[in-house]
Length: 632
Image 1 (cartoon, rainbow, N blue to C red):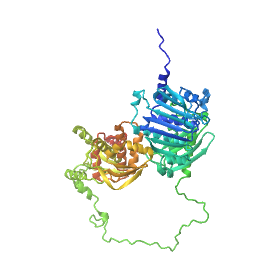
Image 2 (image 1 turned 45 degrees about the vertical axis):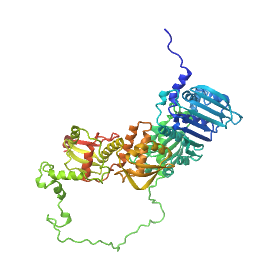
Image 3 (image 1 turned 60 degrees about the horizontal axis):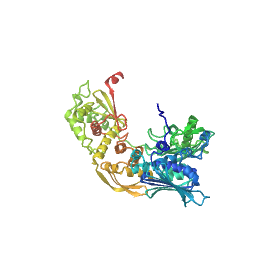
Image 4 (image 1 turned 120 degrees about the vertical axis):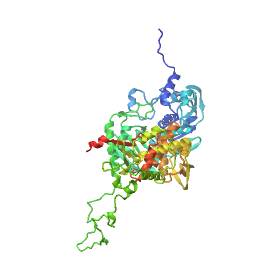
């Protein structure tokens, strides 16, 4: 019987390795820019075409490579960083495994021009699909110039999984931000299709954060700086009042390398406990410095997940540091009881007269008379009689028997005409379910029965199974969400022009995402014009939504789309519709009239999924009759 185990050819092995290292154009930028940083570059230019799908070019002024090194750099596991296994635990450089360039050359067409300062001529190498096509001397500046073209040209199955140009550019900008934030001493430039997106000169950490995002963030940052024998922590955290549900910038760096670490994120958010609303977050840019021998950066192919030897201890230090910073820079006014002298507090003397407001005396008031003209003796059942008839018609055993149906029907009909208190009532809801399903949902309660609002958050009313509690905000979110989905699908949303256009500022990364989802935003009813430089003018808003905060809504929409990066259009539409619904829905604490409560409940139980919000939260709950009886 023949042997069946054999060694893979280098070309196949490199393509397999490329599947881990090179996932999209942003992966190429990460690997090549890290090599430029290791080469001591002070100025790095990145040029992409079509979001990197057509071309990615990285130019640096580092120390360059000799002719032999330039050729060896494309061999698998050829590296100058490590010589033995123990070196893996004392790494201070970005790259070390020596597989990035080999993987890139296996799935793309690569050109390299490089020269060292002491050499008169540089080296030009052209490789396509891991095959060297040309190597010759060339005149070029000191440093390296890598050009990667036609990514996955020889693997069509991989290339078809690349997303749109805008989506890939979003990933490029995201990866670019992770690199430049941790190397503020290096100058970076990023171009897309020949247009400069970023020009970041060398600066301080705080200035680099401002340059990448926006000046508004500067007023929200608090500095942190602590040194311990275990870890040194520097950076910035956001003020509690700057918290938001979406769109926050949260970055961890360790020894000059970006990392994702949910455990350390929990340490930061623990420090904000009881200071920010539940479900909201703050921005932070935290730089950790530890002994390289206490971490392992080789546990993930992209080196974004790092293992620490002392995670629990660092967690404690990090949480305490952030909490101390919040307290030290707190703007809460305090009373100092140690001041010299007496406080200037006015003291009332014995003879000080207190002016009294004259109050008219109602001599005709008789507390035992039901017909008194005093306002306090007004009949408490006036409104009840107007809506439900005289109390004498009610059965003593059931307070809801004997209600005047005609009066209730008129009241409910009037409530359907209310259009100002609740936004978007003039929109048709998604086509209803069949009559049987709708009648089954509506049979949970009788719309004609009285209902009331509790704590400005819940609508309480009797149902056939007990007592129903409806979360008013979540109910309205569900109604608006299905309306928005329907309107986007059929492009039926009307636009209301605004008298004075509002200017909204986005970061460059947010602007890329906004352009990608502009079609969906237009379908929602927004009329937005790009003014350049990250500024957009809002010329129109969805009809009926004139009262919403357009700045917050659009930023929430962009943040949701960024969270959904790389998904299908349907997912993007759902994210946009949910963000719009959450921002436009009635808020907790808003007082509702009976007609408004009726309108919400009627619209809710016409929805496809009235029981839960689009993100899975419970909308209503029923306390059954047995549970109520057990209370007594």
